[in-house]
Length: 103
Image (cartoon, rainbow, N blue to C red; front, side, top):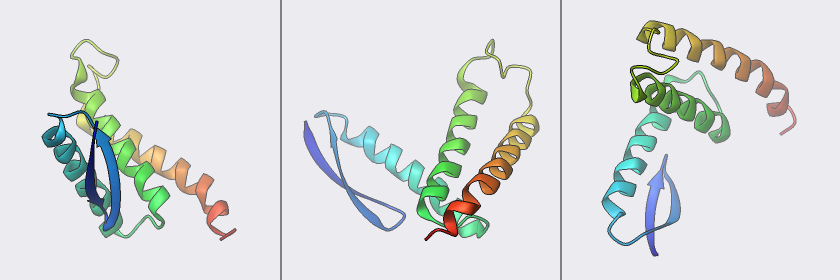
């Protein structure tokens, strides 16, 4: 295993990966950084934890929408997926808002 220093949303992280997989990890980091920065820059979500959750939901929805044409999302359009993500955002917003008031 090797250590790789990366930056996600301006924060440094040291990640371990197998030798020869550095490029893949760097691409994954760049992709995630882009998603998280886009969520942050949209201005609707505050806090790194919430931004990470929203970015993860976005990545998961994208993955599931292209994963398998015979899968459960095969009959869902991109619009349907986006509507489901927005519904998840609403649920997360209402669940996480009380937690923000604690800090």
